[in-house]
Image (tube, rainbow over all chains, first blue to last red; front, side, top):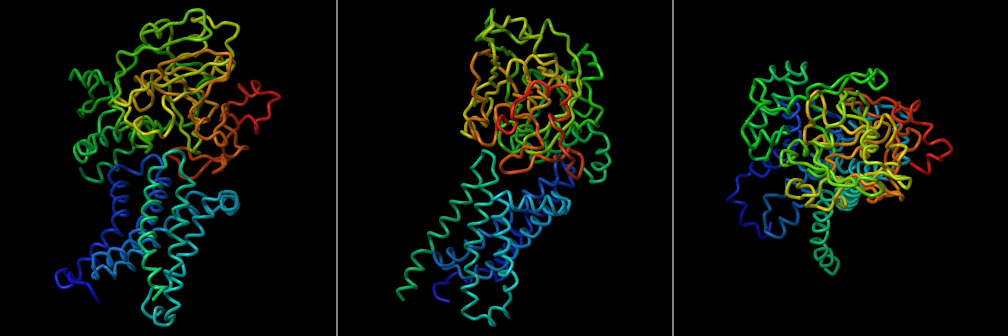
Length: 203
Length: 325
């Protein structure tokens, strides 16, 4: 790979260890908090927020890998994209499960009402629906089987990230600080790609 | 501290609360700027009269209050002390539920005075002690339903707002009562960000304010109010969503016009002036049909007027509660 001077200096296991640490961190923190402080006043809310927030942040982190790699030539980071993306999907699954099984106690009518009447729920489900095929096709075998179509399919991740940020934005009561940070982060990631996309079109 | 000891102490509400504070203080406490939600006077003077056996502080006990008649004491199980004092919406100290417990130690509740003005015969600024002096305190156990669909059951200590208002002789033009929370970003770091248009404002129609269920509270669980619960003086209106029950009050104004209220101003489609608990009228972004009673796992149905319909429904006779939500 061109422009990867750091490759030889960074131990191969380090980036993946970092990614795994980032992936496990939020779950470990929540588990630690529950075991030290008890489940607290509203563990379902805490779990739902933490899994949702972690999923979104890991998704944004996975999208941050490529710009870092290109800007600084840190090609050792490349494998992190999949690890972080899959971790984001795992948190999204936990988030969805907490919402359906704990928040709504698997009450079909309540779930249906939430989905049909609340745009933020729809946006969240949309993000999850887009991420699912990406997680399923994240293996090397699927990459080979789909060839160039794999790249096109995996561009859905941008739409999923936009929906996830919108999902967060729409559910906030008054403090728009955190969703704004996520929106700015995503905007920067998308903005960084514009010149590359333009160049690849011309080329 | 071993895990099993913590688990064991969960059986006892106070113990878990005290241990947790201790634990946090020993651990990340310093870094997080954690403080004790307790008595600020004791904090400053180092006179820890309200210390408990394990060295943590609680607000001082209130002497000589009586139990309110059964009509004012719901029989539901009371919320754990740790939840009532550690899970709060008090945006003046931050928007996370745990922020108020972390930051409310900055609030100085002594000295404290309240301005009473507008349509009253005897306006003025009154020191808190003078304001409270004539009132007999009683403990009432009320349900509290947050607009976010969770609820608590809390033993407040206070007195009817009506008794206080009458002392200041409302004029015939007094149709509404407006309340204001302290504005001081030094003591209330949440006010450094414009999450809401500070100071926090709330209001009631005069008949709501005069209703015997409406109280001003100065205590909780037999002690003075912890700062994060709205010390030294807060409103409690049990049939309305929690945001109506304004905390740390510095001004009470009677007026002819309906006052502007903070959440209504922030999002008029989402938060009405009345804000009566109503399972039939959803918040635009979530259902109000059910609520999570803190301490219970699954949600339970929400009752109209938070279970106080027999007492207050007549106040709204003939009103379209979908329109005046």
